Image (cartoon, rainbow, N blue to C red; front, side, top):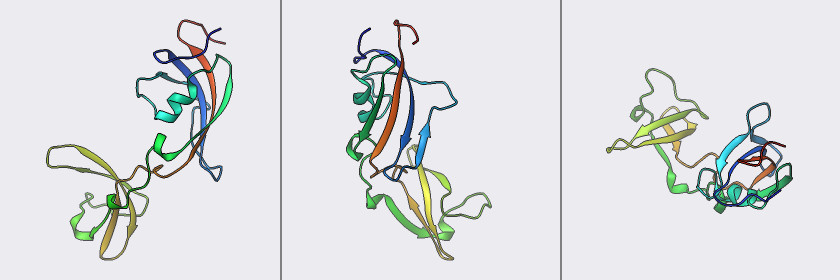
Length: 148
């Protein structure tokens, strides 16, 4: 049985946790995550962590922000007048996700992080930016080697 290497199509089961143990994502109860190692289909640290694993192996991978979703960038947080945001009659609420379009049509996902009577604070950081991520990973298949 060989070890997973860049270019291999693999399938993994995983559970992702934050430093405080909060689970933010998991394949439990679903099909395993399928991706090709080294193709940039998953965050860099996850990709590198699976390289070298054998089918059936379990591994814990800790990924610093610079190999995940980057550090938080406070310049991506902006407070605007409440009347500048139109949500089709829906009242803005903290925790609500919205999309804005740039003049060239690019869609930018934003999170409303705060709402007052006069303002709405929008955050374009990825929700996991600045977080150290911890994954429990099990390699279930390397394409061509069958399932174990």
